[in-house]
Image 1: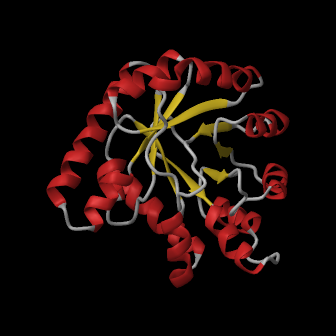
Image 2: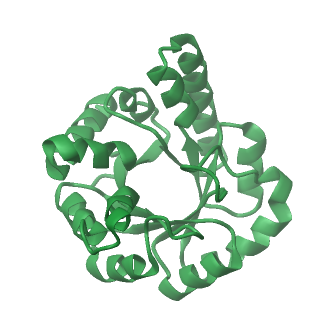
Length: 248
């Protein structure tokens, strides 16, 4: 892959959600990760939550053993998760906000308010070679804070843009998209690598993929849902095609 090609990270959390609904072994998220890898995913994302609602500890063990593409380990800034990340030393660690009552990650991390705590939290992860990413809103204050604490990567939260688009609120979606565009360029100007994700679909991915500063998109729930109808490999192929078309 060239240095300018947009990378696709596939999040396999919700394969584990379906598995856990029955408490058995199927469908296997590690098998899904390997299929996504074979279909052209440049990385795999997995979020180990405190309540283990989808990905389990054994899944992280299996992914670390099975994958040849990088693993992006999403986690909250807790002592428990830090210990797990330090034990496994995944390629990348993405720090996300987490509340027990939420259905999925809501909003970006409040870095500016927790700057000192987060700086100390990520330092050991960087020391063992993990690339540290911070999941944040398209907000200059949060980007500045992420830069100050030593993060190498930010992942911009695209959820509001996607939600407004799905609700037909196109003016609001356009405003969110413009904020994402401006903050992608701003973060890049600071030397941060820029990723984006949350809620992206075939209908919403291309405007974000077209931002030249964005190096990676992380997409999960939509692709796992689409896989029900067309299979995971064709679903990943179509997302890859749309990304490449937007970039080209």
